[in-house]
Length: 409
Image 1 (cartoon, helix red, strand yellow):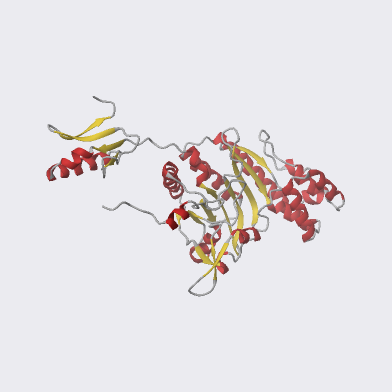
Image 2 (cartoon, rainbow, N blue to C red; image 1 turned 45 degrees about the vertical axis):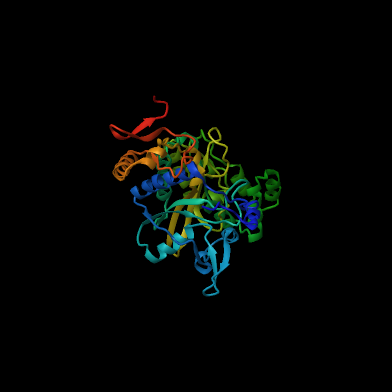
C-alpha cells in the first residue's frame, strides 16, 4: 500500500489554518458537554410547556430585519441569494424569527423555545464569540409582570437542572418605560434623549450632573442614575417614586412601572438570587417596551463578566406583547461535569486470530458493554490504542471474550 503523501500546496495551507477572531472549535469533552446541555435544558423548557421551533439559519432581510433595531442590523452578515439576487441575512439573533413564526401560527398565549447557532459581525465583550449557540424562551400574548415572573422561575429551573447554585446568580432589572415616559413628560427632543442614554451607558455621573443642571426638570434624569436597589434592600416602589418630581410621581405609567420593578425584585429574592435595579439600562431602548433583565454570574464563582442571560419585554406585532430571554449555552460549559467513560479496547492480536464464530460472539459482547455505558474500540492496527484505557477485551480459551481491567494480573 502506498504511503500517504500531501501536496506542497496542502502543506502550505496547513500552516495558515487559522480561525477568525471570535470563532472557535468546540472540541472533545466540551462538545460532549454542549450536547449534554442541549438535551438537559430543552427537556426543562418543553416540560414547562414551551414548544420547540427551529427556524432557518438565513432569511431575506425584509423579514429577518424588518422590525430590528440598528444594533441588530449592524450585527447581521448580509449575503446575496444566487438564485434570486435578493439580499439575505445570516441570523444574529433568533428572537425576530420567533416573532415571524408567532405572527403566522400564534394564537392566544403562546410559548416557544429554541436552540441554534447564530452569527454576529462583532463579538459581545472582549473575549466573546461571534458564533454563540443561542438558547431561548419566549411568551407571546401577555403584557403584564406575571410573564417576567414566570420567565425568572424558568431560568432558575434551567440552572437547577445542571446543578448551579441560585446564590451564584445575580439579576439586574430595569424598565425602559420610566425613561421613555419622563422624556415625554418633560418634552425632550431626540438629540437630548440620545445624549442622556450615552451618558447613562458610560456611567459618567459628573458629566450627567452637568448636563442635567442645564435642563428644565433635569433632576428626574439624575435620579434615575443614582437610584438602585441594593442587594440587601427591601424592594419598594416608593424607593424610586419619592425621589422623582411631583409630575412624575403622579404619572400612572411611571407608578405602574415602579410597582412592577418592586414586584419582580421581591420575587427574585424569594427565588434565592440577589437583585439590583438599574432604570438606566437602556441598551435595548428602541426595541424593548417594558421590563428588561440581565442575569450575571457572581464573581465569586467565575471570571465571566458579560450577562449570562439577557431578557425583556417587547412589542411583537401591533397589539401583541411578548417577553423572553436568551443565553449562549457555551457560557455554561465550565459548570458541567461529565461522567468519566470506561474505555475498553479489543485485543488486536486476539481479534486478528479469532474465528468467524468468535467474531460474532465479539459483536454481541461489544454491544452488551456499550449498552452498559462503556466505550469499546475495535482497533484497526496494533498501534490503534488510546493513551488511557480501563480494560482490554481479550479472548479467553475457556470463557470466550472477557474484559481484563488494567492493573489486574
